[in-house]
Amino acid sequence: MYSGVLAPVDRAAAARFFRVLGDPTRLHILELLEEGELAVGALVAAVGQPQPRVSTHLACLRHCGFVRAERRGKEIVYSLALRGLDRIAEHADSTLEPIAERLATCTRIGPEWV
Amino acid sequence: MYSGVLAPVDRAAAARFFRVLGDPTRLHILELLEEGELAVGALVAAVGQPQPRVSTHLACLRHCGFVRAERRGKEIVYSLALRGLDRIAEHADSTLEPIAERLATCTRIGPEWV
DNA sequence: AATACATATCTGGAAAGCAGGATATCATTT
DNA sequence: AAATGATATCCTGCTTTCCAGATATGTATT
Image (cartoon, rainbow over all chains, first blue to last red; front, side):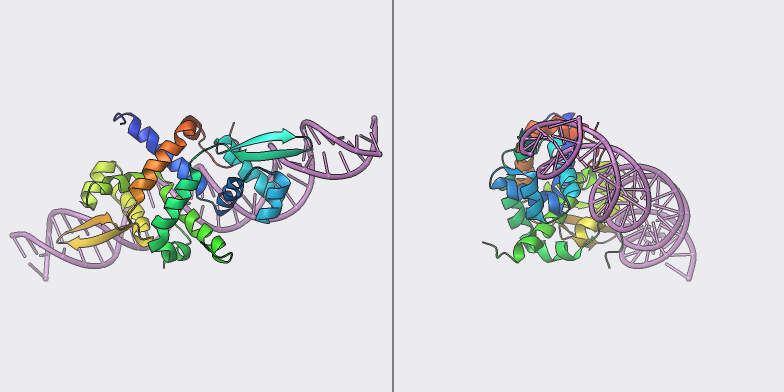
């Protein structure tokens, strides 16, 4: 159990954790890495987005400890550095299922939800 | 299993789902509602933040289907509308544990991670 | 009907995140 | 050492999100 002091800290960490997961491209990258390690080139090809963008998302995931990078010759190979992401994704999928449509149509978090 | 066509859609929905969870105040509100329904006034007092702010976050959670609002006399009582959030929070807590420090110090997602 | 209470919405402004493109870095090959 | 390939970082502008304060809406009370 947590002490009362630690709870808010954990909440901040948890919020950031979810926020990192809260981007389709990063989610896609993590999904791909679930299958096994991949070099940046392969990831770029798989997600179909410009290399600098993928690289930035990888930097985010790397700095936050979600993935690990290893230089292998000319390439840099990425792999997952965190266990349990697949389980969270599963639970999220089944949990959000009842509100999937709303989530899809709700394109912003602030006002003007129409 | 998903068809190849549905996967991207689900990814967008999942990303938004996580993004809604990716705010400390919203997370706090959801935690409080796990214990049972609460009126806005009680929520405002509990999270210790200005009423309009709490109200906006509630609107977000409501529009996305995370919570439900019911008018009861002068008050409006909120309750959870989604099952499984507690399980996701649990899994998230244990999953992010190895990188909790990084998440705490990593205050931005874009460049300038220092 | 007037007032008080509870909550929601609407402003404006600041900051964070994201996209696009150019460029820098590092390792390999010639 | 020069050139090439692979990846990372920098710069700029734009969009989204967040916050703070003021105001509006709706309900109950007098």
